[in-house]
Length: 91
Image (cartoon, rainbow, N blue to C red):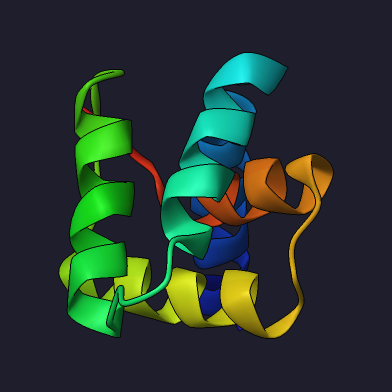
């Protein structure tokens, strides 16, 4: 029980420190992700590069999972922001 509480607290702390990306940045990422021919590895690399350029890290597994969710739900800019907040790790 205590372990779960600590994990929830860490997640809240991590999420609270992620910046809100500009709509222009999110739109650019969304357009790049929607380009035909990107497989999950390429999409994950694109997400990783986007976050790294802004000072965040991300595991490739998390990036692939996020790319899948973004594609499956035809993410809005708000959805993209939320997905990035879930996976971004402050460096």
